[in-house]
Amino acid sequence: MNGTDEELALGQGPSRGLILLLAFSCGLAVANIYYAQPLIGLIAPAIGLGPAAAGLVVTLTQLGYCAGLILLVPLGDLLENRRLVALTLTGSVVALLGAALANSSAVFLLAALLIGISSVAVQMLVPLAAHMTPTARRGQVVGTVMSGLLLGILLARPAASLIADHFGWRAVFALSAALMAGLTLILWRWLPQRHPHPQSGYGALLRSLWPVLRDTPVLRRRAAYQTAQFCGFSLFWTAVPLHLAGPSFALSQSAIALFALAGAAGALVAPLAGRLADRGLTRPSTGIAIGLVLAAFAIAWLGRESLAALVVAAIVLDSGVQITQIQGQRAIYTLRPEIRSRLNGLYMALFFLGGALGSTMASVLQTHGGWSGVAWFGMAVSAVALVFYATEFTARRTAAA
Image (cartoon, rainbow, N blue to C red; front, side, top):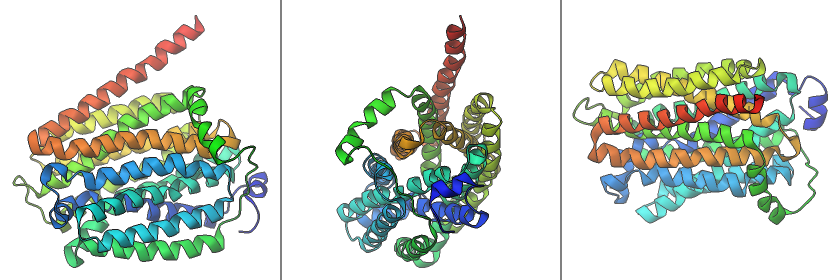
């Protein structure tokens, strides 16, 4: 696994072993953003947060992730990538230890913010995989790496619930800190170096973000789709543990973990989504994926008293969100390789703002409107996304005319 990414891309791209390492690393690192989601009912009272403010445990991590995407991920176009990844993961170790040892809401929420910022190492690894891969295989390789990332997202919740049920919620963050330390050493040993060829410094790099967003309509459209999709994703997965632990089901943390594990089946669509993008089927499958999220919230509302219906809703929702995410990244990775880190950072930052909105609204809606309020809000967001998706066809007809 020696050599630069440019040398690998001239051949067949990264080896199978390196692709699997990248997928595993993405899953392990991105899980840090989601460990707190099923645990807010345990963490909030332990650090002195009331029910309506409990969503801050998740929201601040997502806002931190947005900040890291804007401030750190573009450095992938400026600095040697392997060193940048290692330094960012080292920051994760410190932040996770801070969360594990926090004894007040202020300390924990600061640690949550820093966990989000440092977890953007994931979004340094995904563009690196794209850099190393020839165009013809890029969708497939990115889809495989994203499978690891998405499995990390989906398995983080059941893993956190199971660990917390037996050892307490602090053990979740302490264990993750140890895993991040080990991962940092492994990646330092096996990742190839990538030296970008920057034309400007960090300040100019940040100032270039607005022109990149303004002048890249594909980026704006794909980010808009995923913002709505991820808002629904965070809304569902922040609210559903509260619903399952409530009087309708009264599930334990271990039972909630099994529910989240069932929902992880949606990750199986990730490689398929990459292949659909490689075959030019992005537009029709995007509409289907947005429709899947709308259908998931409809199922969640109609079957609000049925555990089986909620499991189906979770799988359908996760499938829809993953299809649009992978296809969005595939679309922006075909644009300009020299600014790929900035494109990826903007794309992810925009839709994580949608995630922050979803997780904030989850605790508020669950407290004041119950599960029905959560489901109706999710359906409304998906309906708006479908209306915006329809403009893709009207714009195409106008251009043709």
